Amino acid sequence: MTIKTKLNTLFLCFGILFLVSSCETKIVTPQSVGLSEDSLKIATQRLHNYVDDGKLSGTFVRIIKEGKVVYNDRYGLIDIAKNKPVEDESLYRIFSMTKPVTAVAIMTLHDQGKLNLDDKVLLKGDGMPTYHLANVVDDHTMDITHVIRGEERLPSAPLHVLLYRFFAWEQPEFAHLPLLLRPDGNGKLSKRDGDRLGFPVFPLNWHNEETGETASGYRERGFYPQAFVNMLAFLGWNPGTNQEIFSLEELVAAFNLDKVNKAGARFDFDKAKWFNQQHLRLQPEADLVADYRLEAAARGLSLPSDAFALAAMQLFMDRAEFIGDTLDGAAYLFADPTSYDEVMVGKKWTPEAPGYMTDLKSVFAQTDYSEEALENAFKAYLADKGYGFGQVGPVLRLAMAGTTQGPSIFTVMQLIGQEASERRIDQALVTLS
Image (cartoon, rainbow, N blue to C red; front, side, top):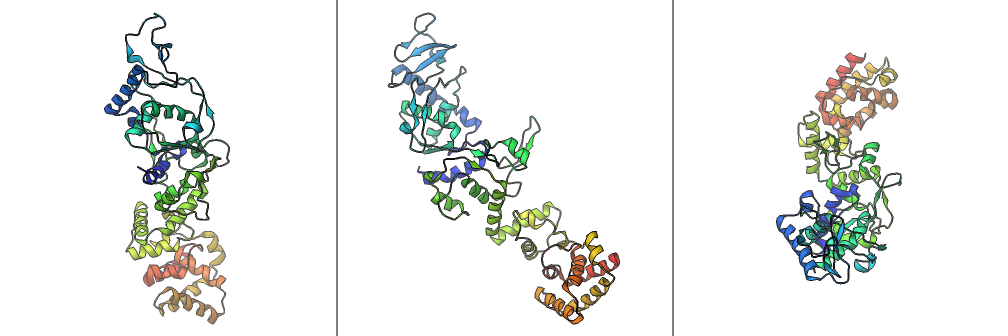
C-alpha cells in the first residue's frame, strides 16, 4: 500500500481529528486501541517470546512487578525481593530503553531532535495492552504505510520504532506535523476556543449522553466535505503555487510532506468560510438545487419547481458562504410581504408614492414580464415623467419585498410573476397609503 493510496484516508482523518492536532492514516477508536482478540494474542505472544528468547539485543529491557524490577535482559528473569526466578510470568508490564535515541536516525528526516525514553507500560495488569503496544500492532495488522500525526506524539515515536524492530515488522514512515494554533496564535487550538469564539470543534454534531453537553459540527453548519478537507490541508501546508482551491483528487496528487510548514498554523474561521464559499460556487446545478430544497424544507418553505429554486438561489449566490445564506432575507420570494421596513416607509413612501405604483402597474402590464422588459419599461416611465430613480425605485422595492435591500427587483418580479407582482402593489396601496 503506497502513500498515494493512503492519502484519501489521511485527509478524511484530518477532518475527524484535526482539532486534536494528532492525526494518523487511520482512525483510532476505543475498539482499535483495545484490539481484537487475535491482535491481542499477537501482541502479547510476540512480547513474551522476545523477552523469553533474549532477542531484544541492543537495548535494555525491564519488566516491573509491583514497582520492582523483576527482569533485566542482561541478567534474566529474577525476583529481587526473593532473589529467585519469578514463577508468574504473566505480569510483564514495562519495557523501556535506558539510553537516548535520536529520532532522526531511526525514523525519517521529517522529524528531528533527541529524545529520552522513560519506562512505558505496554501490558496492564489485566492483560490489556496500552496505547503504545496497541497502536503498533493495530497499524501493522492494517498495513499502514505512513503515520502522520501531531508533534505532541513525537516523544512516543522512538518507542514505536523499537517495537517494530523487536517484532521484526516493516516499519511505516513517521512524520509529525506542527500543532494547530488559536486564531491569535497563542497556544494550541482546543474545544474551549471553539466554544468561546463561536465556531464548531467537531466534523459532525456531537452529544455527550452522560453530561448532556452538545457541540456543533461543521456538516450541520453547512460546510461541504470538499471545502472542509481543502481548508484543513492548508493548515500548515502549501503547494508552493497560487492555487488554493483543490479537489480531493488534486490534493492527493499535490500533497508532499516536504511542503509542510515547520511552525504551527493559526486557525482562521473566516478563511474556513471562504473555502466553503468557493466550493459552493463549484457545485453542479443539480446538487445545488437538491441542497436548496432541503434547506427550504427545513424552514417550512415550498418550491414550485427546480427552475424556481435555481433562479431564487442565484439571486443571493454572490455573497453566500453557505447554501442557507441564499435563503436568509429571501422570504418575499415565497410569500407576499406581511410587514414593511418602517424606517424606509417613513423616508420613501411619500404622498406621491401611490400614484407611482398605480402608474407602474399599468406600465408593467404591457410587457411580457421578463426582467429586461420590466426594467426597460421602468426606465421609460421615469424618463417620460421626469422622475429620478431614488424617488420611485425604493417605493417599488417596498411594495414587492417589504424592504429596500436585495437583488434586482425586476428579476424578483420576473420570478414571482405578474399575478403576484400586481397583488403586492395592490396590497401596498391599501396598507401603506
